[in-house]
Image (cartoon, rainbow, N blue to C red; front, side):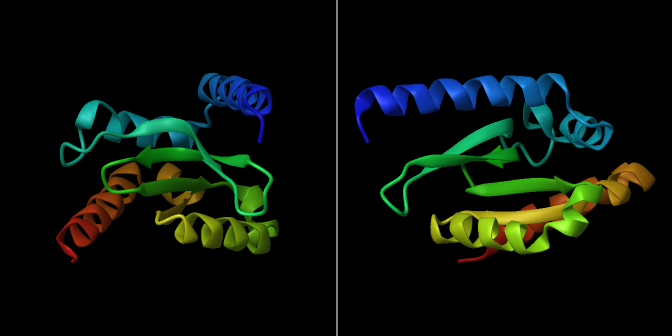
Length: 133
């Protein structure tokens, strides 16, 4: 990919991420409030973070709801629409796994019903992957 194309893609990703941060869902806000500023096990998370990749000679990106670079962990909050796109989500997860990242998915419904339980689920997952070889 040419430098100009890569720069254009980066500009597009940055713009989309900013829009998603401004228009975050209530469940994303609840999780962000619990993990931002290293509040969860001192891990640094970014929200609405682009993950660039090139598997087929065509560079593109996914936007992770939350991303921890240290653990190469992506947290996705799945709303109603994800019930109808599980095949696409699985393909996306497979690509991200291929890139060496782990993806954990939580339903928006779980977050809204009990944010503390959702955060505990994330915390337990972080502990589990931090202690694995």
